[in-house]
Every structure is written in C-alpha cells, then in structure tokens.
Image: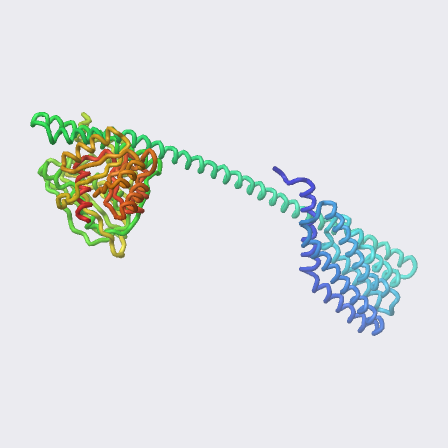
Length: 592
C-alpha cells in the first residue's frame, strides 16, 4: 500500500522546509550576519561614516526581519503535522514572501550605493554578487522561489554597473547583470532539483519503511494468532489426553485390585495364574503409561518443578527401586556415593535414570550395573554402565527413537516396547539436560545425562518404597464415584485388614462426617461428580478439625498435582497396585 498522494505532497513540503531551514539558518545564519556586519565596516572605512551608518542601520532592520522569519519558519515546522496539503502550501507561500521581503531589505541598500562616492558602486556590485550566490543554493522551497528573491540583488548589480560605466557601456553592463541573474536562476533551479531528488528518495525510504512496518505488524498479528491457535490446540490435546488417561486407567485400576485379592486368597495353582494376570496388567499399564507420557511430552503438558537436591538422595531412591530386580537376575547393582547438589526437577530426572537402570538390568545377563554421579565441567554426569550385550555403532544414532529395540525381534513383553528411551529423550528436552550413550558391541553400554550443579543446601528427597512400621489406623474413607474401582479397592483394603467406608461424592462424604463418622485416613479420587478431590479433603479436614492423613487417587495425567502440592497431599496415578497403596498408607502412618 502506497502513501496517499495528498499526504505525500504535504510531507514533501515539510521536507523542503526542513532543508531550507538547514541551509539558510542552521548552516549559514551566523556567517550571513557576519558578512553583513563586515560590509558595514567596509563601507564606513572606504566610502565614509555616513554611508557606513546607513548600511549598518539597514543591516539591523534585516537582522530583526531575519529573527522574525526564523520564528515563523520554526513554528511552521513544529505545527506541520496538523496541516492538510492546502494549509501546507499556504504556509510555504507565506515563507517565500517573508524571505523575498528579507532579500529586498538586505539588497536595496546595495543598489543605493550606486549614488555613493567611489568606491561605493564597486562595493555595491560585490555585495549584490554575494547575495546572488547565497540565493543559488539556499532558496529551494519551490522551483520559482528564486524569481521572488533575485530581483533586488539583480537591480543592485545593474544600478552599480551603470554608475561605473555611464551611457551605452553602462546599459551593456546592466544587460550583463541580467545575464548573471539568469545564470543564478539556472543554478538555483539545479539546486532545487537536487533537493527534490533528496526529498523523493526520503519519501521512497519512508514509504518502504511504512510498508515494512505494516508487514511486520501483519506478520506479528498472524504469528500471535498462530501461537494462540497452537496453544489452544495443545490445551485441547492435553485435556483429551487427560480424559483418555482417566477413562483407560479406571478399569485397569479395578482389574489390578481384583487380581491382587484373587492372588492373596486363591490356592497355589490359581494364585500362579493370578500372578501372570497381574504381570499382564502391569505390562499393559507400562505400555499405556509410556504412550501417554510421549503424548503429554509432545503436547508440552508436563510441568517442570526445578529445585536443588542431593544427588545421593536420588541414588538412594533408585537403589530401593531396582535392588529387587537386580537380585532376581543375580546382577550386581553398584551405586557410587556423591556429594554433589543438583539443580533440576528430581522426579523427571529420576524418570531418565530409572529408564537407564531398568534397561541395564534387563539386558545384562552376567556382571554388574554401576550407577555413578561425578562432576564433568560445569555439570554433574549421571551415568549408568552395564556389562551387557552392547550396541552396534551404526545403531547408536537411532537408539533414542520411538519403538526401537535392537535385541527384541520377537517383541517380548519382558523387554518392553521400545518407548522408554524415547520418553527419556523427550524428558531431557523438557528439563534442558543433555543425554547420550557410549557403547561397544559385546562390551556393554554407558548411558548418561548431564545435570546442572549448584552449591546451595539441597532439599531432602523421599525414599519411595522404604519400609515402615505396620499400619496403626484402620478406618479408611474411600471417596470414589466409579463403582467398579470402588468395589475392587474395598476388597483389597479389607483383605489387608483395613475397615473401609465407601462414598461416591463430596456430598455423601460431608454427610458421613456430619453424622459422626471419623476416618483415620482419606482416599479420594480427584474427579468427583460434584466437586474436586483436593477441595473435598480441605473441607473434610475443617469439619474434622484435624489434619487427617489423605491420599489422592487419579487417572488423570495432568490434573491434581498442583492442588495436591499446595495443600500437602500425596497423589497416586491409577492404576495403583495394592502394594503401592499400602506402602503409601504405611508411610502416612509413620509420619503421624
């Protein structure tokens, strides 16, 4: 889009005024006044005091007129933004008239020097010629501006020439004065054209800049709309993943609890079958969890909680998590101690290293798995080294891709489904940590992740899976709106010796408390038909006037954690095995 013609015309006038101000006042005003003063002294000295005083008086009048012209010009420039093109042209014409009057005030005294004693006429010619040369380069408001300012110096030049050469020679000199004026006008026109070229170039530059600004604004607006659209799509995707996760995990939760009860009550042969069924459910849960983790990481739905913590605490948690699996395979599991303090999200970092350790144990038949945390430059390198089968060099680049399994052609469930390392890669990107692998076929592998270190005091990490004393409390309030999940959970609790009371909503839970029921621990789903699990627990604690231990159970992958952290409630993701649930209850009991 181009600038409107009238706007462009007004801007051209403004630029011409700015050029005129620069040439006539900013660059030459002091020099011009000095020349006028010196001319008065010359006339005083060479012609006589009376003529010198006359020229000086005319110079004073010219000075005040110059001051007035300067004020008008600067005022016009300052107010120009409010003028339309007609007003701009009027202001330009007024300025030309003011300058023409100034030219007459300065140059008519030079014509009068033709009447002065010698060398008055010679000085008059010199001063008039100087005035012409000044007009040539400065009077550029319009092409015809010099026609208004050249007449008085031309008259002064002709008058003094005729005085110096009376008769026909004088007339010839006057004609040459006119020729000089014509040349001066031609030169002034050339100067005007040059100034017009500058103005045109400036206008083109401004038009290009305005077009670029419009394009940038439009692109920025389009980008903002695209970002907003992507954000909305991500939110919609996250909501879908959360709902899908919740709906898929609910039946798995019930099936897991039922199978655990069957396993504990059945005869040996049925128990073995139940154990296999539980293993199948665990594998299904692992696959579902990995798939949903990939989707959540791709959607940017994972919240990073960076803090400072001791590396030894993380290593202790990993030891508790994997020492049983290592012992079952008769693989030695070694953890080196570390005094480093790490700055990262400990839960997400644990996901990466736990994946490394699990894979190392899975693919190591003989030997050991070593977990180490040592400084490396400005980072701590958490490495997991095994004595397993190793990885071919041509496969190292693809080992972190989705569904890549180099030694599981038959897709054995015991070896996973090739999602663990791809999840680890995505988690590393989320927490801004670099990961990698070094391996040689037949000589084992070393997987590593580089984590920022700090010198601040670390926060302690909970030892998930640590054994605690048997439960002291037995009365459990279960708030669960899914009847199948509730029934299975009640069976598992009763089988362990707890006395559960089941309600399906916030209203039923609050009503039970009002009627005198006093639970020793609360198990609540996050999504309830008439409210939100964390809010319910806060209300129940107020009604009970007690900080009753509580656990949130949810099939959501996103909801619940922030609220649980805010009011200090642990949260378990469905499907939760009875063993994990009982460990959590034991832990709560130990805290009491």
